[in-house]
Length: 119
Length: 116
Image (cartoon, rainbow over all chains, first blue to last red; front, side, top):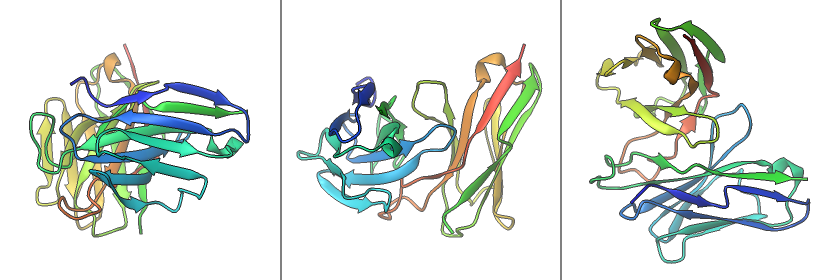
């Protein structure tokens, strides 16, 4: 397993369009997180899953945002009716509750992110 | 209560020098304090982390110092190298096992430049 994979790496879209990002976590990790990072800032928590259950959502996650993890493996983050303020790097991270060969319990491993530009 | 404040915003150090980045937190429920390193175009990568039951943790050239009473912690990079040039983020979270673990609150970041 080579780590957390995110696609697409870059997306340019026009305001009002819908976009979807995909995250494939490290295979043995049961927790998956989405963060948003704007230029010059630290990542901000959006939501996280334990297996297929979405356990927490930030107030940053407006109604236009929806995240799923249908089979407890990969996850998608969809943004509907994009706005220019949605332009950011969307980061996915995963962790294991119990620890193992891929890190200690709770240790977050981030993907390289999906950069969204809304024109 | 959820903020983590990081300073300085940027830091320039000569090769071989010591880089020091500081963070302060407000929420006393935080009990896991990692530092992440991020290169341009990449996601953050865990560098080192500490829990409040110890005051210092060292891994190679990287040391975290933790002051629970002051609610402050810092990253020291000894013998700084040009390859250390990156953005560094401190973060904080609550205990493993609780549903909030892994929900990291990040500082604003410090851009470190190490001159050769």
